Image (cartoon, rainbow, N blue to C red):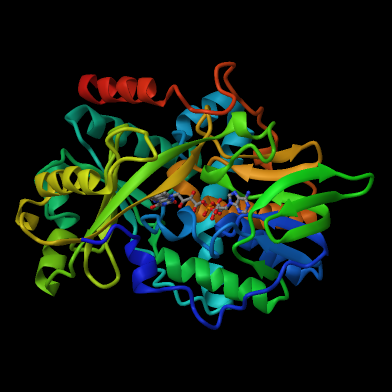
Length: 423
Ligand SMILES: Cc1cc2nc3c(=O)[nH]c(=O)nc-3n(C[C@H](O)[C@H](O)[C@H](O)COP(=O)(O)OP(=O)(O)OC[C@H]3O[C@@H](n4cnc5c(N)ncnc54)[C@H](O)[C@@H]3O)c2cc1C
């Protein structure tokens, strides 16, 4: 078993992707070369701004090449809770944004010829307990009545075999608007597009210091100094203290994945007859799907730590995968890896400006679509094509006890484990 992401082994950084050296001056410097940063770079370069994407490792190195590749409707916070918190107008805007985010990926795939195995497979949220299925029934009724959202429906336990070859669940909520893709193909494709429009892609550039000048900013990196009129921080789960006032708003949480070796075609049809994306209804949820080459990808976490042992995590994930699919017992696991999500205290994405510096963070497990959308929104704002976005209108939350180290995560993990056991 290899302890590296399967996706970049399957599709490594293309040799045709240019390596640019650090410019000395740009209109916009973007820190972080994932879906957020690259989508902003694409829009800015299209609008004739000079733009440099500064990435500490290689383009897409962060969560954008390590994720499950599931572009699912909605946000991390439940939609009804979002309506309660922020009211109907903003609630509708956030819901609509989550749908438009998937449409945007599809649009990019078509117009920019992004070959990333994008498919509107739909997803199924699987009821871990009978009470969770009852909640799904009322949720779907609300989606139809309040949102006129027609692409979701529930499937009872008796009919669930049409969606999944597992007896582990008590029904499910299907949404056919969701999609699956190959994360590494997608992020390298975005990098190619941004470069084609003229963005500089600067890899192995670690931004170490950010200073405000009378006009613009000075960025000190391990490869020299760059000045920029505007700066956009797109570091999400890898946000450090570069912008000290941003750090308390977002904290890193580890997510872990294993994949098996490719499965025979008849097994694939049996395990996932419609090729859906799956996740269950627990707080410590598992998410899983077939990869485009027919492996079972199975993800989740045992606690919120970012540095679990990858052999130990593979053992636990495999055990859970076999509980869901007993026929996978003994099938070799070929890869085990991890990456960092950016989580906010209210489970909402947050965008805005701090001391003039733009940022966008906190997508939870919805970043494939939402990072694409918000990177594009910030790009449009920086290009002067848009004034604001609804995500900038909600208050930023932090907690007095968090400044640098997320020491509270083990306690949060106990709480969520208790909630999963009790409810
Ligand atoms: C294991 C896993 C599974 C996931 N599964 C899903 C899923 O199925 N569906 C879904 O919607 N979402 C999923 N997500 C979340 C999704 O991948 C992220 O929300 C999304 O990729 C975030 O993109 P980003 O560009 O904002 O950040 P990232 O892709 O994380 O990029 C941030 C980059 O910033 C760079 N950086 C940080 N600091 C500096 C610095 N000082 N100088 C230079 N560079 C710096 C880092 O090196 C990193 O590459 C998953 C995440 C993980 C980790």
